Length: 338
Image 1 (cartoon, rainbow, N blue to C red):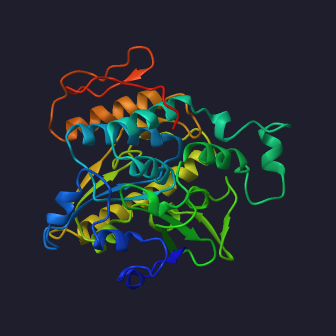
Image 2: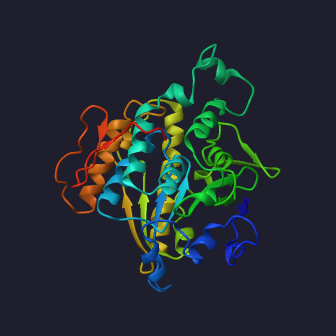
Image 3: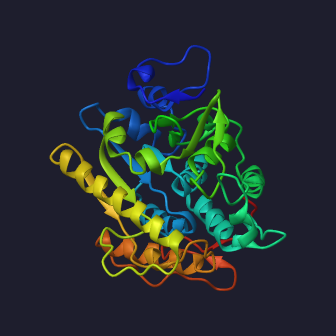
């Protein structure tokens, strides 16, 4: 079921269909170890939300951020995700655990530019010369999602999750918490000019970052009074260089999103606690450069651990193909397919 951005549509459980995020929160349905905690809370205590923002290939940094949060036993009651943040958010929401983060890490390390954006037969210049509204087809991305998303409906995730797409005509956000996860993920990642629009129920949708990349007010309306925002960059964009026109466009896009984030934080002051997790390393990574994913995961972990004011016992361990955040738990081998 694809729901337009009308909160009143989620006030009561769906009759006979998949539960929306509002239904699941109202019924305390997340199937996680935090279930008893969630059920014991009063409405006045509020919930914890993770918001995973967009950022393309820089999204690897969010896996490190999630690792630092989970290491300190900080879990969300629900997740809101946009663009690449939706990909990471769904992956974590399916199984909110260290093992899930290990699989996400391995997936990022195994992903290259050619995995998602294979080279054109006649070169990239030929793609830009074609008379169509996008440069890259999304066939490889769709194949990647079908190989790595093991659910058939978004309502099947262990933690409630909601994705944001943008109506390509009206510019309004579409909030998706049930239905085909592949189509929803293709819609929320459909960067205008780069990837094709996605049709759902007779309407066309593009990247959710256009309308609501960091939905703070949405999280508050769902009952969150503690929100962790996982950025694929930094609030301070000073001195950032732009080597190509596409990077200048994306940088301008990021500036607009950050301006809205500051305004939203100010408007919620005194009502909601917002912690913004940043990465100076991520904003320096070039568009479509997937060679820095391991570095971004490491830096995302380190910067988040520092922000949380908890000193890590040691640097993240990576013997061979292992990744383990430094906790008393044993290292997690990254051999399981995601």
